[in-house]
Image (tube, rainbow, N blue to C red; front, side, top):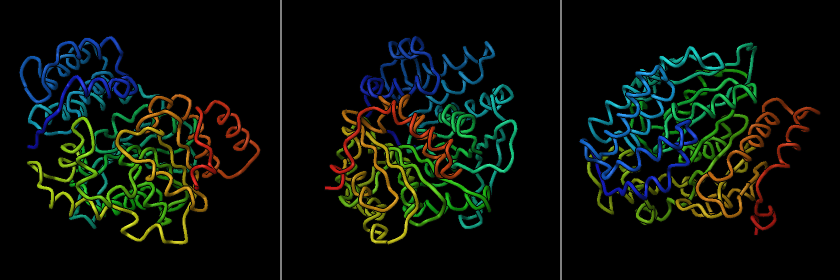
Length: 376
C-alpha cells in the first residue's frame, strides 16, 4: 500500500474544519490532535490508531453515527494501510447501525456497472419520508472524502431540497472498487441511468468530484450540475500540477490512481494530462446545461482559471468567494442554502416559490468576485 510524506500538524491545521463539518465535536478533534505524532505509524501516537480509540469509545456508548465519522477520520486521507482498511470496515458497520435514526429514509444499495468489468459498488440512497417522483441529485466527494462523510450534506439536500439523493464514492476512493481514470465519468453516467432512467437529475461534485460534475455538464448528461471546487484544466501542466499541491495531496492522488508507490514524473504526467477538459475538446462544445461553479478566490489546490474558464459558457454561473480557500470551506454555512435553492430552481423549474427562495438565499451569500470580472 502507498504511503507518503504527510505532516499530521499541517493536516490538522487544514482539515480540522472539515472533520467538524462531518459532525465530529471540536473537543474530540483537539484531544486527538494532541496525541498524534505520525500519520502512518499504527501504534500509539499514530493517526489511525488514535482516531480508532475515539471511534471505539463512541461505539461502546451507542453513538454509531459519531463512531462512523471517527472511523472515517481514522482512514483519512486514503485507505493506504491495513489498519485504515479495518477502519473503513468499521465505519461502514457503524453507519449501517446508525441508519434507523436518520431523519430521512435510507437505503444502502449495491449497483453493478456492466461496462466496467461488472463492477459492483454500494451507493447510499436518501429519500424524503413522504416521497413521490422526485428529482435525483447524485452526490460525490473527491480524492479523500467519501459518501459517508457527506452524510450531513446528503440529508440537507434531501430535506431542504426535496430531492432523492444518491451518495457515491469517487473512483479510487473508499468502497469504489476501481481506480481513478480520466474516463471515470462513465461510472457516474451509469449510476445516473440506473437510478433515474427518467425524470430530472443533477450531479453535485465536491472537490475532485466537481471535475465529474463539470465534465458531465459539458456532455449534457443530466439537467443541472454543481461543481464545488473541482479541477478542470489544470491537468494540462501534467505532473507539475500535482507537485505544487500541499499537505500530501500528490500521494493522495497517486493512491486514487491505483499506485502502490509514488510514480515517476513521466508516468504521472501521462496519467494527469488526459483529465483536462480542454485537452478532451469539451470546452469547444456548443452545448451545455445549467451549471453552478463554486470555489474560493484563494484555493490552495486549484487555480482560479479552473473556475473562470467556465464563466463564458452559456448557462454557467461562477461564484468565486472572496478571500476563501478550497471549496470556499469557510463560507459553506452561508453558501449551501443558496446552492440548494439554485438546484431547486433548475430541477423543479422557475416558479414563484423557487425564485423567492433563490432571492432570499442569495442575500446571505458571502462576498463574491463580480461576474464581469470573471469574464475578462
